[in-house]
Length: 490
Image 1 (cartoon, rainbow, N blue to C red):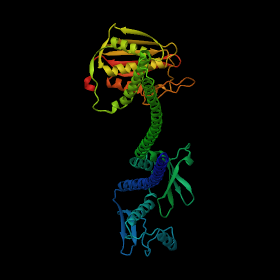
Image 2: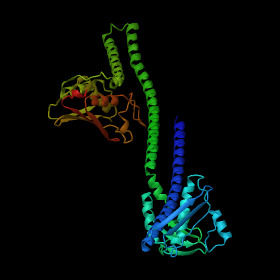
Image 3: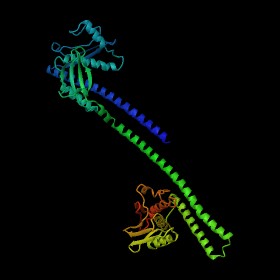
């Protein structure tokens, strides 16, 4: 399952990475096209702005016209009415025209017209090409009278790029392609041009000239445009990764729980067999060896049977308590309890059944403490903790039980002088079936359900429990319970 999930996640990640990379390159190409379009647009606006300035200067109306015949021929001209002697028109005409540029022979202009021919009506793009031809033709006329204002061009270009989300630095120079000379430039002296991207656009037809626009790389701008996609993709991948980690931890935890259950089953089976075997042997001895006349032996054997059956009953009770937290109908029976009397009774019982003698010290603040709780389960909670304190204490065991009250709570602290618990085990001691490994010591019998039961029942009382422990010094279990039952929480 883990291998399949890893392969699936890897496949999703690779596909997502491929898709994002492809989108990035597409955006980059789109940005380059936007820059080229911005250059054409800025040139168009700056060109016609100069044409209008010249028209106002001569107090004449500018007229630009395009004519296409049915065979795809076209003619474009720009002039100022009644001022043809001052501003000559430049035209790109159909191939059979007798009008040509004075600087070129008929043969040269014929070749040029063939190379720049536009078949109007073939498709929609031909209209755009026709517009560019008109723009180039206008340049031939306007540039001889008024040079390109490169500062105006740069400002228009900046505004257009900003509108398209490309707030990038750029510089411009105009070159005469016939001799590669720079006629106009806005490039500062300290500019490092190799770090910039170059966009070239020829804006004339006869006198070959071109814009050389240097722009900052658009990598960062492209990533900004993709910020939403990158963020959502990262979040999706992060969620998938966290889900996988959680599932992996869950599987490992389940495997650990299964191992603990197996250990629990083995321990319980062994522990259940012991009292049954001892009781069976004692009863068999009384039956087969006719010792009923010997009152001393009879009492001894009966006490053995009683003690073993008590142990058996205690084990069964603990095992049954495992399912209590899953029963929705389970409810505690609250009653008024004197904590002093209950602790004295628990200590007395522990003295009888404990495997070794121990000393206790009781500290009550105030002298008498009462609370509302479920008598049976509170008795079992304290009894479990006291039993553990005795089993895991050094010789001779010394256990201090201190209880005091606050405004709304009763706090019980049970402290022993035992083995203590190391930090790596503290987070798990209340887990079901968990048992602390004891190296170099005689194993203590148990099933790993006592502390789980304790925490479950304390939580049912709307209380809490935590542990303070120092290895080889001892442990303190601190229980906090409400003085009055909060039955609404049951």
